[in-house]
Each structure stands twice: as structure tokens, then as C-alpha cells.
Image 1 (tube, rainbow, N blue to C red):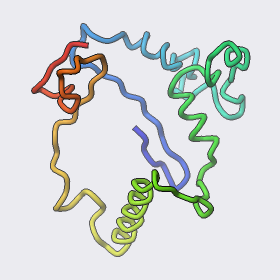
Image 2: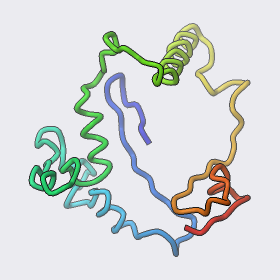
Image 3: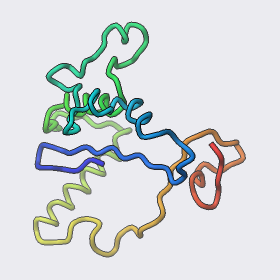
Length: 161
């Protein structure tokens, strides 16, 4: 979860869960995989040891050996990219192309929603009409070609990973 703190800062929460306690990996194994072990990768206040001030402890030797980023843990890799962009990206010199149509449209929608909110309208998604609450699902694994990928993870189509 990315939760805005103010105009230039965001709090990052990583949540992992599986409804079947017999599947998946333990919390300790997951933290080790993500590079988020308290006392090793995070301090006692859950602040990351790898950060911009120490260049995320990037391992150049590991990069030469084939590790793409040299930064341990997927969350830390993500944060290194987010943080290296700076607090506010200057979009005034962007040159969106055809493949950016969805990004451009999303930005237009967000600007319009912010302007309406400033004028006193409800925040986007809090008033009718809105997308109804539906059950969201995810799937990880291999599936036979005969299975419709749009149904993976849904109650209608269980495929064992």
C-alpha cells in the first residue's frame, strides 16, 4: 500500500497474505526474500537499512555476476527507483507517445477530479455512480492453455499452482 503522507512523501506498507496457512512461505522466509528482516534489513522502527544515503548498499560485484540491480529485495529495488526520481517529477518536458495514451488519460482524469474536489464535489470514487465493490482476485502459477486467464483466481475456476 502506498499512502500519501503529504504533498511529497508517501508511506509504503507491504502486505502479504494467503487464505490457506498450509500454502505459501512463512513470514520469516518472505521477509528474507524481500530483504525486509527486522534487525538485518530494517531497524527496530521498520526503517530500511538500505537507503539513498548509502546508495541502497548496491553490490556492483553482484551486478557483474548477473544480478540486474545489485540491490537486495524487491521492495528496496522499487523504493530506490521511486526515491531517485525526486519528490516531484517535472512533467513539463514530457513527450508522450502513442503508447502513453492511457497515462495521459489517467492524468487528465485525476486533474479533473482534483479540480472538482476543490470546488466542493465529493472525492472521486466516493459518490454514485462508481464502480461496484467486486471480489478482486490474483493468481500466481502455471495454467493449461485450456483455462481462460481472466478466470484465474476467481471462485469459478480454481487451478492449482
